[in-house]
Amino acid sequence: MTNIEITDIQFNQIKNFANEVYPTIQSYLSDRNQTNKETVINQIIVGKIGEVGAREWITTWGKPSDVNFSVTKDKSFDPDLTVTVSYKMHVKSQSSEQARRYGTSWTFGYGKNGNRDKEIFDNPHKNDFVIFCLVHGKLVEIKAVMRVPELHKLKLFKLPKKESLKNVKRVIYLNDIPKKYWK
Image (cartoon, rainbow, N blue to C red; front, side, top):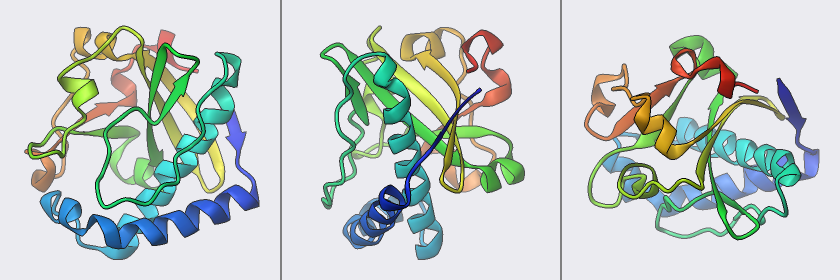
């Protein structure tokens, strides 16, 4: 198991980012049936904490790109991080609170009209990876790492349990990931 703790400075930067980006993504959120501001801001924070922690971890693979803190009105499904020129890292994060509630799992945009992880579902490449993170406050636990084509080969994408997300999301559950990919 690999754990990375982010700093207070990083955490404050992430909180500021989440509060700045929230107003810019209202139409995207309505398409996903997500309307609770506090919940959405917390999801943004958890995702960015995972991304910062994953960046620290992947330095062993090569020089990673910086974490993107740009505030735009458009949600991006581009890789969260790249390592050297060839590896694209898609970071998926879940809070430990959500894991206790729903089981350890990660969601992927599967909808239409731009709400889709295109590099995951439409154009997977052998050098695309997903880093699965569990976030406990400021601590990031890297749970597993897999190549995207392997996720498809093993048919790991499932329907979400929440009915309102079944048309726009797909989920991977930790217990479905073969243990050889666990960290």
